[in-house]
Length: 472
Image (cartoon, rainbow, N blue to C red; front, side, top):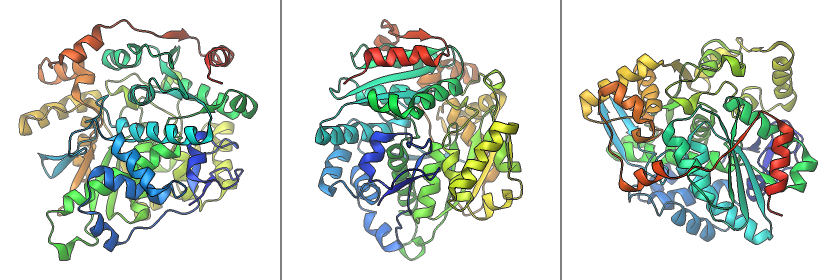
């Protein structure tokens, strides 16, 4: 299995090289030359596996350059701090099941991929005798998951950009309370898209990237996408455990995915392409509904920082979704020149009109979408709590609200849980009047001194900071 760039300018390379590369040298994103395929017989063989064992099997289809026994050791170590089930499924009524992705150390779904990525980067860097300086951007949960997965590692340093004043107080504390020497938090004046733009500018300067040994842990890193594919397989297997064996093959489920940077739902798109019987992939947006507009109309119109709303589901406050490029690559028949045309249209006129292709989104790829607002998520948190006793976070509430619009008889609807509600306690209190309890460990984290460097939206200032603090 080898990987190419969506922009067509990268020599095919193995999985381990894409882990270190992050953004491709031509500015594109790494994608498989072709997706691996999994048949019904293999799915049945995987049914009895634990989550770490399943992860080794699925990731082994992507990381063919890493010995399977090494992958198995990495996945076992990655999920050691999770409960035995790792990803529990639980019903909340109305035909909706939550896929519990927030059992990891930072209480968010990003741990599912980031804990593996931390193991994989360590493994590859050790064998190459290299160091890596991660420059990433976060709208809330990616940063803490990356920092907790990579803190204290000798060969990796993390420079994590976050938008000033745009995250919850819990998210800020979870990142900024870390005082490890290899973790550098940078609060940028602006929104997430400004942070992401800065990351891409540094990664696009190949001379600087090579000199400073830069890499990425955002979902532009193919390793993140591959690791997230695993839980789509796992969720389908767990749902169909209750189905009579003769009816399991081809038994379809739908997934609803709260979406910001399009990475999580892209992993579902890959899983569907690999053979998981997925009927629909339902994209749930918040008020920053650029992606919903695109999938409903075919018109992609990114917003400026000034037009990007600060919402109560802040991890989705994104108006330029990096991973959409991987979907566009498939939409245009894997033609790099058409991908370039897509971005050229945005640069020249601020939007792209693909309305002629829009019917294919659901018919061919199974992707539909919807939008949720602050009032919607409060009402959804309230209704789920009243019906099931479950308390869900605001992003998961966006997912449940939109999932309800696409329920189908005899097609289970699975909503990917985004985070534990404690990360957004103020919104939970507003919705149901409950003051959430925090463990003694979380209370210490919230009260701990915070370590962060504030910075203007300034590429040169960031370059200087990275150069002064990078590992070499």
